[in-house]
Length: 274
Length: 287
Image 1 (cartoon, rainbow over the protein chains, first blue to last red):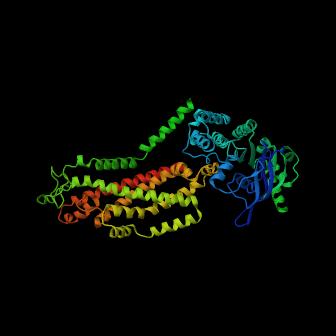
Image 2 (tube, each protein chain N blue to C red):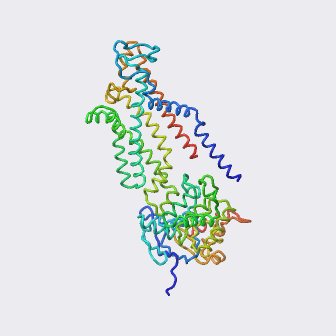
Image 3 (cartoon, rainbow over the protein chains, first blue to last red):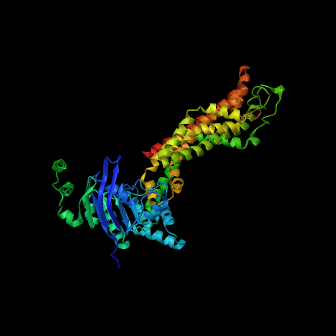
C-alpha cells in the first residue's frame, strides 16, 4: 500500500496582482493531512485570504499547483470543475451576514446544495438534511427561518452546514469567527472541532487571531508579505517562535499588562529591518 | 415558543408597513387599481357606445345623460374615457414589459460576464440612449404603420437603456456579494444562480424603475397619439382625445380635452409615487 496522500498539498503557489507589481502570494507550499487542521496566520495584507481563495478556486494562481488527495484539479471556472472542486473543498466566509441569500430560508439553502451534489432518495434526503442541521446544532425552527431572523452565530452555523452538505474532504474557514462575539466564537470553534472529529473533514483556518489558531489548529503557518516565514506544530511555534515576526504577532495579542504603544514601537522597528 | 411568536410579529409589522406606511403610495395604489378595474369592466361601466357619433349632439355640456358632455362628433366623453383607459394603460404596460425583459437581460448579462461583453453591451445601450425615443417611434411608424403596436415597440426599445443601466449596476453590486460567490463555489450553473438568487434580490429595484418608466411611457404614448402616430381614430385613447379636443377647447367646451388630461396626470403621478415609494423602502432596508 502506498503512503496516504495528504488531503491537500500546495506547491509553490504564486499569485500577483496589477501585472506582477503586487505579489499577494509568493511561492508558498504546505500540506494538510487527512483529517488534519492547519492554521494560516498573518496580519491584514499578508496574503492569507488570497491563499484561501486559491485553494477553493475563487482565484487562479499565476503559477504553482494544488493537489487534492494526490490529484490535481484543474484551475478554471467551468461548471464541471467548480462542481468537482466543491465536492472536495468548501469555503466558509468571514461575514455570516453577507454569505447567505437574504431571500432564501436556511432549509432551502441546504436543500439546494444537497440536490446539486447528491442523488439521494426522498427519505435519505430528509435524513441527511436533518443530520446536517443537527451537526451544526440548528433546529427545525431555524431551518424555516430567513437569515435576517437569525443571529450571527446561527448564520455561521448555517454556512457551515451548507459547506458540509457537499461532503467535502476539506473545509477552508476564512476568518470565519472574526465577525462574532467572543463567546459565540468559542461555540463555533468547539463545533468545528467536533465536526472534524465526527466526519474526519480536514480544516484550514485562515485567521489573524493567534488564540483562535491555538485553539483549533494542529499545525500552523505564519505568513508575512505573501511568504511563509515560519511553520510547524501549533504548540511549538507559539511556545518557541523562531522568526521575529511571529514573536511580534504573539506580543500583539491584547492581554493583561499589554501596552499598545510598545507593540507599535516593536512593529516599526521590525518593519525597518525588512 | 416565545421566540417563534416574536418572529411572526416582526413579519406582520413588515406587512403592515407595506400597505400603511406611506399614505401617498397607498392612495396611488388605490387610484391605479380603480383605473385598471374601469379598463377591465369598460363595457359594463360605459353609459354609451364610445364610438356612437351624433353630430346633432356635438359639444354639449354636462347633463344627466352625458355626465362629462360630448365631444365635437357628439360622442359621450365619459364613455370614451372609460374605454380609453384600456389602450392608455395597455400601451405603457407593453412598453414597460418589453423594456424590462430586454433591459434586465442585457443588464444582467453585462454585469455577470463583465469584460468585453460588458463593454460591448454598455456601448450599445449608450447608442440607443443618444437616440430620442419619440424620434425612434416616428421612424418606426413610417416603416411599419401608425398605430399602438408600432409606437409601443419603438418606445420599448427607447426605454430599454433605462432598465438596462439600472439592472447592470444593481446586478454588479449583487454579483460581488459573498452569497453569490458562495453559490459559485458550490458549482451551481450561472443561469440558476441568476434566476434563483440574483434576480429575486434585485427585483424590488427593477420594479421601482419599471413603475417610474410606466409613467414616462404613458406621457410619451399620449404625446405620440396626440401627434397622430399612436392610437388611430375612432378608437378611444386619452392622448388621442386631447388631440381631438383641441378645437373643442377653443370653442368653449374644454371638458373633452381636459378630462383625459387630468386622468393622464393622475396615472403618471400615481406610478411615479409608487416607484419612489418602492425605491425609498429599498434604501431604508439597505441602511
